[in-house]
Length: 401
Image (tube, rainbow, N blue to C red; front, side, top):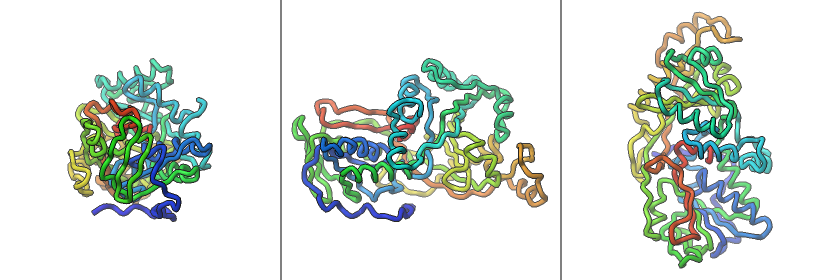
């Protein structure tokens, strides 16, 4: 059974009264990338330059894809120099015309929360060299720490001496739930039309000049088509004789009701990524829920996006809980009274600390739609320059969400 989406206090389901049959631009898929595309196209609509329609096959803000929940990591620390080069233009406030800052200023809503970010793992893990090199060649400042130095700065961590820790102060959190809603709301204010619960059944290319999009709610022609369909991308590409190798996996995150709220608050504990020998883990301070959040990166099984279930994977859950118990035990249970400002533990707290499992709030699933090399695709289709495609951002390119 699908997890019900939270109420937002308003409904997008009513179709626009002035819906038309022809648009300059149609956007298919209104998750993180699709909602952003709709907004940026609609910014031109205010001046009467372009008309745009956004289509979503489910209700807006649904839980079937990869753009739900409270938080995504946004960071300059990337494993390849070209990602580190473009990341600042998404959110680094010191640059002009920064994407997220533009949206925040128009909406009056804070969407990006700076926490700083850690990337750590065994010293001999070459991924750490890639992260450090990508930041160095792009002149991004960062700290290269030993495990001892890192634990002095963040006593919440428990690391072995053979660990290397990279810290970059400009990393943080994007709230995808607020961000998607904000993008769509601002786009509609600028004149964009939005149809949810509208399934695309057929796409008919009109030479190189446009396309006809056949849906469950009517047919629409457009001069430009933008496909942001995530796991459903290849369904949209069939009419163009194309297929992108995409691996769709069911992933999951877990929240724990840590009693150490102050120690794991965003002002005291950063977002983090841990690159281990077999797995990669990631997590957040207390944000969105009254608890910490973590998951195994690309640890899930391959699924069909139309038939996949929503039940958590027990093996993944055991994996992340074992990792958290070893590396950040206070994220799940009571920390020793070694942190500045921490009260002396009472007998009640000491009893609580003896619980090796800790209180689990909940585990929820989502989908990754990754290319075979885990790289993001943003391009026009061969022989169809009027059609743009983006897919693959549920991996390390999440700063574009």
